[in-house]
Length: 387
Image (cartoon, rainbow, N blue to C red; front, side, top):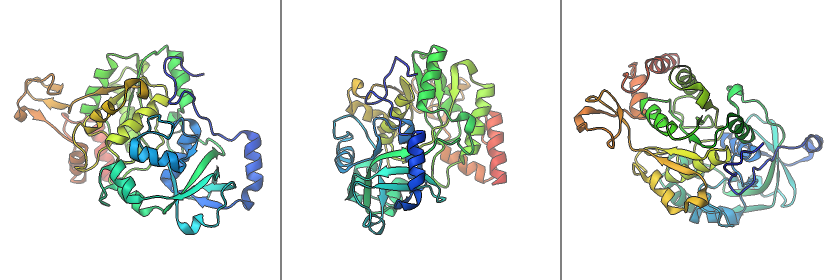
């Protein structure tokens, strides 16, 4: 059942899960279909398309949509969409594939997981995509490096996911968009705020989340567990930190913890829009946008990810961004705050970024209570020692 207070992006929640009959037919053809092996990100994209997380997208993008998204942050029909969703392969892989045919999609392990109905195959300008989407063509940027490393041909067309399997690590937190919408409705939530992070939850996160929770009915705590950079904290550690916070520091009747199975792009401002639209599809009416959302290194300004929302009319996006300044621990008031609420001088503000904390953990140090709740800090330190 779909909640009545917010429609999915484009008006319809996409479902590209193969029916039993379709699955049987695809499996019967499995050995005769040409194969394309997906990497981890493309596998995540396949799943997100199929479950409706990327609604209204029903497959890997055709050229008109791709170019429009790269250049204008809109699909060819003018609907806002900020990040291209493509399946890139080498020319060697693409050449024998015939437009109009069905393509078998295998995951990185070689397992048959989906089918693509090939409608187009086209070349694209990697540098053009990098500069427009990531605002840089430097291959030190992890998102740009993915573009440069992938194939030169995009395969396009609608997809089917053979089966929605339980997540191998977090099956009890696998709540897909149709299910989350039903849960919100069952709880009577008319307004729901979504929160995205790829980092362990810390005191600044907790502060802005609870500020948001004051003005809505419920919180959808939705950490990303798809592909991330090698130096990011592993997903299982991050999820244990969220469980600790749920057990000790959040009102459990007003919070749902679920996984976001998509992969990280590190596209900064554009990814903030992307993440907001994904949460809209899950049924959220509001979305938290904090400091340097989805950023990496020094590629984006502190609040660029908030300012980009001004490039769209509110009704076009259909989800309300909640914009927060950089939160810190104020030694004068002995609590979390931002410049809007604290009288502290710079010397009285304790700022600790995820990067700094990762460095502390590598050095065997436990993050201070001004940064992490003690149980979370202990979990992070324990995990680092075992890694």
